[in-house]
Length: 74
Length: 287
Image (cartoon, rainbow over all chains, first blue to last red):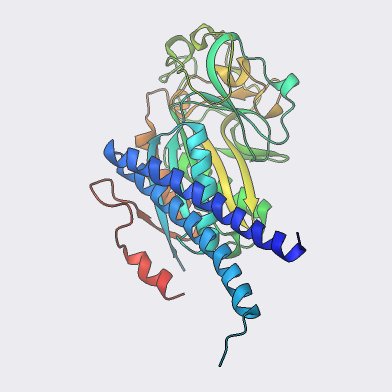
C-alpha cells in the first residue's frame, strides 16, 4: 500500500474513533437525561459535540486532499 | 476583562466517567466547540495514582477496603477522593491565561485560599509543595479535638465500584484516630490537593478541597501525595462544625471566576435538550 493510501486510511481510522467516542457520550447523555440528571447529561452532550467536530475535521482534511487531486473536466 | 465560560455542577460522578468527560470536553474546548468550562463534582471513594506515583511505596490499602483504584494522567502522586470533598476540574485554554503551567497551579492555589477565606480559614502555600495547607489553628477558639465534622468514627461507608477495583482489607471506620498534629502546633495540615494535566494548552484535572470527610484514608490507605508523616484535615474539622460541599461550592465558584477572570454560566438543571441556546453561543459564533 502506498504511503498516501495509508495516510488516508489513518484519517478515517481517527474519524471512526472520534465518532465512537461521540456515540458513547450520546448514550451516556441519554441515560442521564432519562434519570433527570440534566447538567450531567448536558456535559456529555457537549463532550459528544467536541468529538463530532474532531471527526469532521479529519473528514474535511481528506475532502480537501481529494479536492486538491481531482481534475474536473471543463 | 471577563470571558464567558460554562459552569457544570455535576454532583456525585464516578471517577472514570469524570475522566472521560474531562478529556472529551478538553477536546471540545480545544476545538472552540464550547467555551472554557469549570466542573464541580464529588467522587465515590477512589484512590487515584498520578504519573509520579510509586505504587509499591505509596499504596497500603487494607485488604478488605472496597475502594476503586484509578490510574490517571495528571501530575503528582496518589491521592484519595470521597464524598464530602469538593472537586474542581477547570477545562481552561491556557492560551487565555498566560501559557504558564506553574502560574496556573499558583492560580488554583489562590482560588482555594480565597474559598477558605470566605469561611475565615487561613490557608497557606508552602514553598516546594503544591496544594493548600494550614499551619495554625484555622479559627481562634475552635478545638480540633472536638471535631465538628466527619471523622474516622463516623466515616461514610465506602462503595463498591467498577474501575480497576482491588480488594484488600480495611474498613475506613476502623482507622486509628491519631492525635491531630495541629493540636500541639505540629506539622502543617493539608486541606486541598492539586494535580493538573495540560495538553495543547488545555487543562484537565484540578483541585480537591476537603470539606467534610474522614481524612484517615489519606494516611492509612495511601501515602497521599508521596508525603510521609503528612497530616490531612478538612474544613469541617477546622471549623468545628459540619459542612457540606453545597455550602462551600458558591464561594469556590466565585473564587475561580475572580482568579481566572471568568463569567461563569451554569448549565440549567431543569428540563432541556442539553444543547439549548445560551448567550455565549453568539460570542462563539462571532469568533
